[in-house]
Length: 278
Length: 163
Image 1: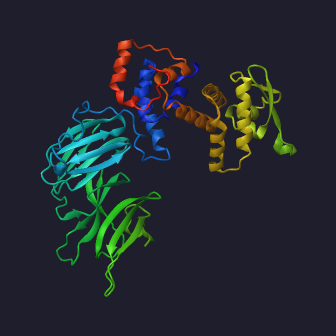
Image 2: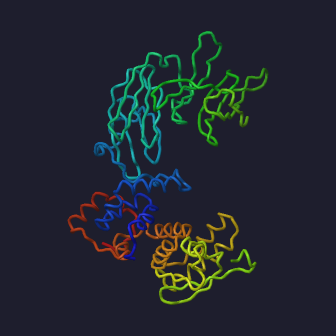
Image 3: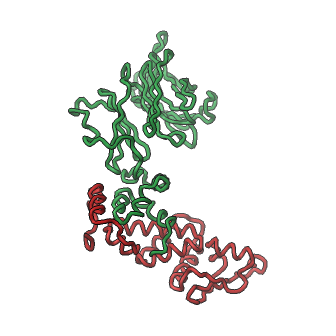
């Protein structure tokens, strides 16, 4: 099969799972170069994303150029015992990003190549309430926010911005554990706003624009604000969508969970929220 | 043309070892290379396919006929492709990937590449070298170092024939 040119070889090898691919680095030098090549890695990632079972964790990016060489003590070395592990985490393209609240360290872990890296950050002034890790504009980014600060980190470059924002969010508390949802270039978090005059906590959606690096709110669906237990955001059919969980409160009847799903047909337009189901 | 006369047009394809094959135009134009020739009007006589041998071409034509007989149902096409490739050995698959590339048949190309990848998964490095006709250009020390660096990837590899 000597006539195989590089394109055809890439076509075949890009379909292998990472473990098998890395093994083949020992076939010969040209294969090692191909498998380590950045364009090939992108091709492999693209193929991996389009597979039917994207959650299977071997289908991951083979070899991102990590910052420092992986910490030989690995991911959990900074966590003396499980009880002190205070982590927030998220995953994309097979990369797992965890934030260790206790030590102020970001870990990026690539299980499919068994490597990890630690990024120490400027210690936040307060507890991290909001977190997001994802791909925006072809760059992996991490957002961490406390009540007064926003940290925007690009782990694969040395880009780091850090902002103190006076108007930021001491009056908000996260509703879904603080995990962000990327949509339309903005990261969104469902939050409770503590309005003093209101008899209940008011649910709203915070958004942070990754390009302009500004914070805002977007209009919430026209829901009954009472008795909301949890809210989560996601994308349905290309629209930012919202899952609301509340407890029913009918006099005399036992309390039950009640779900609503809303979808914002036109991004940012309050009137475009449509209820998809109850 | 078929559309004008109402009778199916048949093309004659010639392999590089001078075997002739008849195939319905509607099936043959799954190959973009052949379709372009038909559209350019160079398909009047025999279409020579200089990069494909008779054995492989026969196989490709079986595939063309089989897949074009299936209506637009991606599931059924996929299961046809799986079945079609299931009994092919590595050498045949290798010939087919070259043919699919030359004939510009993306669906066959995808399926065969995926099949080859699947066959390769658990094979040893030595097997891969032999089948791909690759000479090992590492020194023993270099090779040992590369293997050591990625030691864990050798778990579960077939050891029948490799060091």
